[in-house]
Length: 425
Image 1: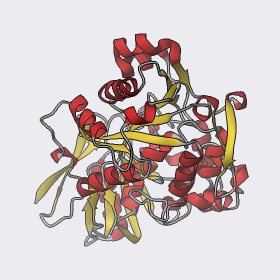
Image 2: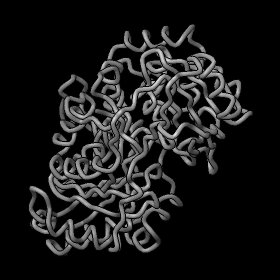
Image 3: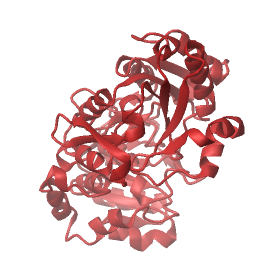
Image 4: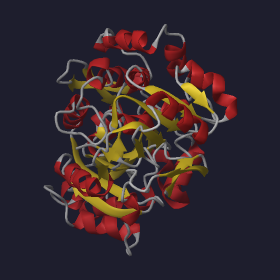
């Protein structure tokens, strides 16, 4: 027997399993570098992929807008921005630089969060030239084209009017866009709510290519790339971070090819082959991502990618902060069944997409096919049951129920951190 530890909040649940039980883990912990993050970024900027140097792009441009990530992403901006700014000023000492915060559909980033992200020095230098994007204020956004799928491509006026538009970011697996980074700085980063809703429509979410780790043929990704081109995003600098959120690799240059090289690099560490099983145990990676139920389709989708047809999934997440979104919760809790809501999503026209529908749809897509035992804090029992999963207080209880359902000889696959792996053939 061997012991497998599953991340849960800031602790873990342990389970003794047979020695031959598959355990799907990423190798992101092997990503290490003896160079400071800022040096890694400087080197990438000196060797841009399919692009002139940023200093060359800055020549003759009166202004530049750098799209930066918001408070919800652990992007090491203090590694990325100083070298980018230095290169821009090397090419044009008088260039006016604006920082545009890519909030996407999130709430606005606060001053305190910006200061923490940028550091005191950068914040003080740019505080009068920082714009926080607002997807919900049409007066601040402007149409720049039409997405291939039909919706208007509407983005922040600051991005649309820039003489030179570039972005920072990081690359990690994403549960329906494939991977973060690159084109996501535009859509959803600085896109209007109308455009975000169109991109996150039920038809796209339902695509078998709209899955973790998949970019090719992914309709969500394709619309995002088109939006970035319409916005005239000409240069990106994306990093890969280790488990301690430290920069270990950087990819700069062309919107598509630099991002692709970063994706290919990270994939070598986080892609694992499915190990089909009757029972799959997965998590949302512990704190902070397992604080609410809204985030849980991420870890659950890792289990979906390897559980057998008709099998069951055990999901571990504290949900200490509750639902994470009332609209997400009630869309499921108030529905007659998970299948009824899922069919409602599929029948929803692209232009009628509502906030958080994508997460609700993914949740119901999984629960309509698989029994889910959900281990969460005791205070969240009613919420878990409202989401139409079966609440369990401990992993031992959940595993016992799963074996009772699937049989004593049921096969098992373990995923200790469901948000760190890309499970695909």
